[in-house]
Length: 406
Image 1 (cartoon, rainbow, N blue to C red):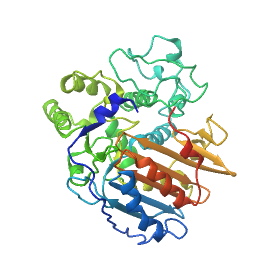
Image 2 (image 1 turned 180 degrees about the horizontal axis):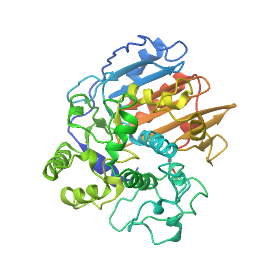
Image 3 (image 1 turned 45 degrees about the horizontal axis):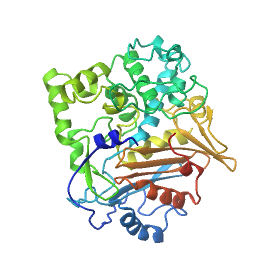
Image 4 (image 1 turned 60 degrees about the vertical axis):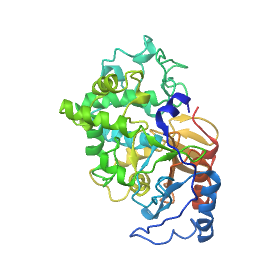
């Protein structure tokens, strides 16, 4: 991750890592993990692994037989307060945000509001796009499969969107592509991005504590990020967040209804030293979702199962398309529509990682077995833990662990 983004995400406090405490709160479904997943012996070792990795807290949710079967919090939200992580603790999901947004876009496609293969410029007049004919070729499918040809993010004034290849040719991870699609969704619906996501996915799926904008009510049970030395940091900074909330009151326009133009205007007032690039904006379809492990697992069920369809479910053909390789990356990894695919031993699993500097996350689902796992952590070394947790929960190592953003 670029140092400028880390600096923005991490506003460090002043205490070293305290000893890691373990807290658990069994779900109503089951007090112990499903058989063959996380053993008692592994869970007993987990606090020591967290201590060694300098990861103060994490949350795990397991899916078994098409249900969220178990969830539990471990460690502390903040080493200064030593407040325990529980199943309701909210974590930044980082790039796991992309999968939820992709689901919303596919629902819009089913309603014939958007065509995945129509150039995005036909929906949106954007004067800030590159003066390059390839910019007029980018489609929603290119954005969702990371095949726009653009870089991941821009960080400094003067940085321009640059093409490394023609749209659709190959894979190159790009948050910029997702954010352009976010702007198109705002244009099509005439709504703010947070409003769209609440109405189309979060509220219908019962994700009551989840949001693409950190809400004031989240503060009571929010996991602060910690750097590799265990120093806590704030997500964007409380003073900065308050300035945006104050601006929303001044404008008499809730942040949930803000569109891209509102975000640019707000940044110019609150953060004039930062360029108005998507990388620094909230809400952000690519990175700003905050959620709990159990609520994210509840969303994952919609990707696993074709049974009991309802108004918010994807059509079965759409779900299969989402889990069908669109861009091949290597012998085991491909990208579907909005998420990674791991194809090993005749089995296809879907997955995604999240990396917002001091928060690391990972989710993996196995549609064939109707099982899955999501791990949210509040430490910069969290990836060292989710690899072990997921390997233990699924009974095997995964090719997805070896692949990283390129």
